[in-house]
Length: 389
Image 1 (spheres, helix red, strand yellow):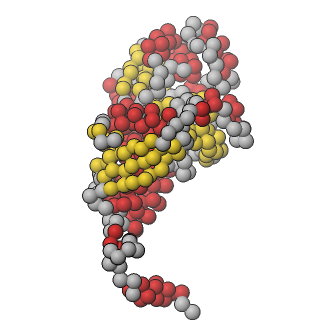
Image 2: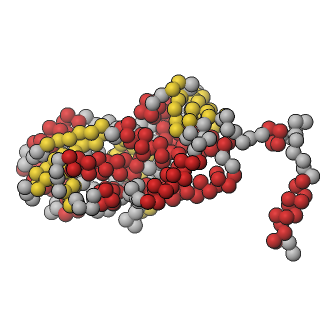
Image 3: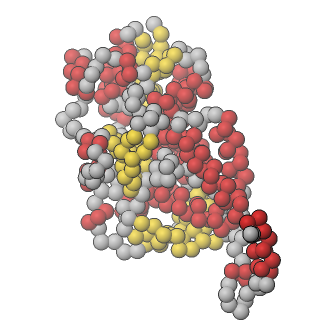
């Protein structure tokens, strides 16, 4: 009997997939990756075993996710189509890479996932798997099986005694990790319908709170966040605290229609409080320490980096090359950024760095001014020379 390692979430699709794969003659190893989904794994592990999994493997990947995936994306300034901070997209290559590692450890010849044929995640999983081990067979039950609806899956689960909780139905498809929440389906499928309060997970209720302005300070060393309000913190604690305070103020909400890789448009809502605050502060610190040409050129690469993440191309030569370049840009991105939080917004109100390129004596209009304004005439004439008539 061939072994298959299934990326298992504990939900309806992957629980049914365990039995379906077993019925196809596979020995199924259910692999669960913890990237901060906020789900209890005990019930999911029990469900996997009842469904027919020969083994359940759980891996805590939160720290690796933050250090090896989130921080590189932060240093790159990666935001897809100007708004999506890539929480789900960044988690997929990590989950898939660990899935390949589990397959090797368990001597499995195949891997499987529960992605649909409409989404981006199928691409992210399968490209990563092929980039790391092209010999593994890849199975996608949701694309292949006979079920035409969620109701048919539920009936299959009931016939096979799989304990699926369908009493608390949600109209939404929700994905969470430490970097953010994405929500789609339900009423959100009409792009002209305002998202209901129930479509938000972390920032729900912010509109009802009477909040005073709050100042926070973020510390960076070579582009990496290392502290909050003067307190040194590891990655997970820092992200958790920023998510908590950002959620309180309703920061990081996004409602967008995006262009999926498969060619269709999708409307989703996102919540990314920590990511929003960190990206804003990091970019502002870069504006202080990077020269103009490097700052501008890096902005163009940030768009490409975001596309590579979104398209599932994490383990590619171009991504590796961009990481090397971006790493060199971060050598002097050290300092502190002060932000003022208000309901639904954050504003940078101060920044400092030992590598600051700002010179008051050149920028000032006071008596401290040392800029020789007479030089401007010659500069302008040379600059305009190619266009002078």
